[in-house]
Length: 260
Ligand SMILES: Nc1ncnc2c1ncn2[C@@H]1O[C@H](COP(=O)(O)OP(=O)(O)OP(=O)(O)O)[C@@H](O)[C@H]1O
Image 1 (cartoon, rainbow, N blue to C red):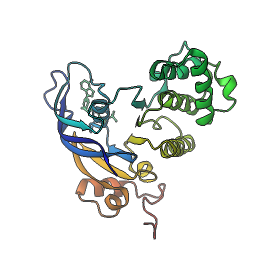
Image 2: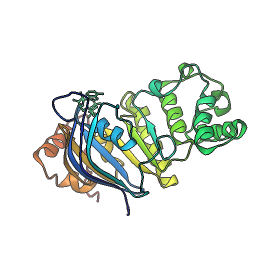
Image 3: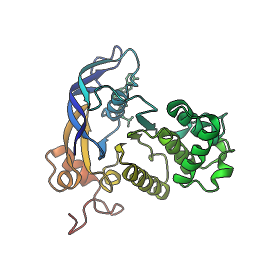
Image 4: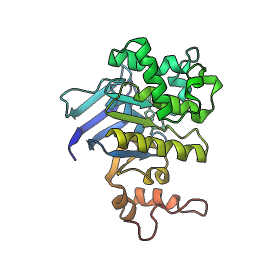
């Protein structure tokens, strides 16, 4: 696989904060992979996502290099789609579902409203919103949380970006809907050949579908590698503890006997 982005020595400090939120991170992101960024709350996962998307607040200080294969940072919305934990934060409450999904396609692909509207409906069908034609005319509050997240995914993908960042995109959903959305995301990125950066605090969820995992703690990258390798032979006591904390009676094993 070729490299999409080489992150080298990247540190991020917000405003006047005394300590950096991200410290000296070295990580490669490969084209077309599903990479899970895993860590507990405050470990710097969202900071890394915002740094990759160029969406850090203006007062933050970034040092180090992010070398993109296309020779420039991706343009949010066009080259890179973002799905957040709370779809309400990315969906406009006073626009219909159809208008907001069409908006990205219109703006970034230069489509007319009519064509963008057709594309929006195709996208809603693609993310399996029931009765897509009807949903086009609905407002966000008229849909369930899982359906709103499907709409947010459709909006993020409307301009056909090559990269999708899902930042705790399923954390607010119940287990069944969470599993459906994760498998939908996996399927969509695979068929479009996109790169997925999946940010989560849940190592069990990530282990189900990520090609590689990167474990963060207190702003530092602890280790990164193929999912099976990191889970079967973790290189740090912290990763071992994270894995162990998921081995309880309510959680299925991360690695099944005999799985490769
Ligand atoms: N805009 C901001 N201004 C100041 N500090 C911030 C800002 N955003 C995040 N931080 C701090 O940076 C550190 C890393 O936060 P970040 O949101 O990246 O972690 P995270 O792993 O994504 O956690 P969570 O899952 O809770 O969002 C935390 O200490 C947080 O308080």
